Length: 634
Ligand SMILES: [Zn+2]
Image (tube, rainbow, N blue to C red):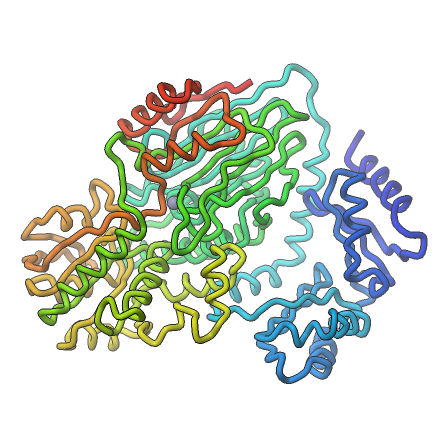
């Protein structure tokens, strides 16, 4: 059946299933979603039963929306809402999404917007005709999120076209024949950096991750016959926003990709933040960049956000479900259900199998699973890390030691993940009096990344989620934190005589504001440099960490040499990656146990070491492919 005939038959089924008094204006198809536009929406708003019934019968997600012709103008609706909502609701924003007929009221006191048993919200819906939703105002406003919303609004026509094209592709005619499933290694196999894999079946091709090697700037092998032409790829799925998993993605659109990108909502925003920063960084170092801001905007326009636990069709024979990976905000394990029960494979991306200050541990229960793809960053026999608690105590002891003699503490961090954890630890140490009260300066994109964390509370662990909405308990808003906003302020901190703590990017000292503090403080023995994150083999961070007394480093486009007398220490245990023990217990406690495990994302020895240990202990078939190799799964 061709796409148009299939759509017509679905339209007939929908019309037959909805209540007779529903005045349907049109039925459209957006990616895997059936959208029913209704003229008398107010009658059905808030009624989830109809959409749920349609979804179970048709095995597709269904959204019922007001027909755009029935929607009152935005200004008028905004005025009306402000008039209806009581003052004490403290409304901080009213956001319109005309393409879905949704208006979101952001308020500090959401209960006041809902009214008695939701009665006020119902009234607002009836009065305006819009699908009105209420969310709690994010405690820290994020520029990235408002920019992303801006792009989506600007590109809304293109986006509608894109979603319709995806919908057609999902129901295209397929080829008959034997079923097969393969995974091809495009990058990040037996290495850390430039992660990418191709999942292919008789009918479909999906790319999982699209990384950039931060050390060498090398990109995945996208020019092999299996991936070409790149325009034939059905979908790109991104597990999380670190650049070694998404740093090449905007360039893919330059190479001719024009299809959808699936990731969680926080991944979309963090990805944009890190990619734009990467462009700026390259510009500062006069390096040629793979892409510019226009390509990042194009990527955002093509992104279809999918929440944890939601299942969506991404190719004629592939369904995707994301689950929490515990690694950074929005990080996901991508589970693919192929064919009608033909094969199930989960790409776990980077995982943390321990409850951290920020997240719940990675999910390892799936309805069905035959193949697991797992990282091995810390998969070596001796890769054991201290617990989060021990790491926090160690950091506290170092800070006391450093500031006793009036020294300053510099902590290089990645903007996303590590810096928020270290902030939480220091806040607790100071609040409980375990360390003296000291100002903590945040330099680089840390504040903006923190703002994005507070905008997605449902992705944080439950303890933190509760805290961030109580103004006086929100640890990120503690008065000990100061945002470094200007070069002057940085200069002042550098030359001040007072002890303090500075968290600055970048995490491996390859660039960013951390180098400015380091340059100023390096020759003073009472100052401390404390590493809390992974330093890759050839990074400047690793060289400094090893204790070299003379360092040559890039600075403002020149190369400078510094004498380093500063004390250097490392606190292990803040990693966002599972260590050896956690990787093994992740597998041990899996439900169901997979038949095969593909080991990736680790140095050569770590990949093979973890693979052989898994085989010995669990008798599960393992494989650690090289880049460019293909594994047949069916
Ligand atoms: Zn990562």
